[in-house]
Length: 194
Image 1 (cartoon, one colour):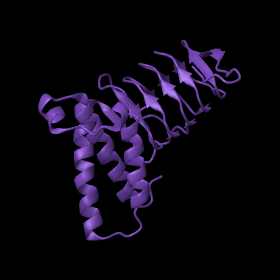
Image 2: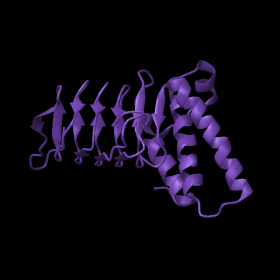
Image 3: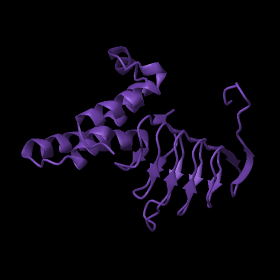
């Protein structure tokens, strides 16, 4: 959760490092309408909305800054079809592409360094509130659906079009409708995880 300027800076730099090795979009990206420009600015305004939501000092300036970032965040959300509720995602969030509708509901808590592809939906838009908890270093495939109150462990990979309805342990690879554990990730001595 972003509570001060140092947290805001750390979250923004962590988000940028996960995309294109830390290169911020340039004027060329804006002129060519590259999707990285839009994704960067969506994350930039989302993190500022989180900061001003959690900010202790409520002043006129803070309210105006919050309103400015909130309006730009909402405009980009509608344009990109990506809606991430503030204060749901940890640092190092990677949104790989724009495309299908992506929705992260209010009661969701996503850990650090997670990757979300287009079409990932957590919960229902107008349904009952969900309390989904996702661990660190998770990857969600194209069109994955996480429905209901579930707990997803750390280092989990969820395949494309999987529908998650029950808890998933750490280090699992999951796929299918309804989702089942395909295998577990493991490390051999001295070799990195693949």
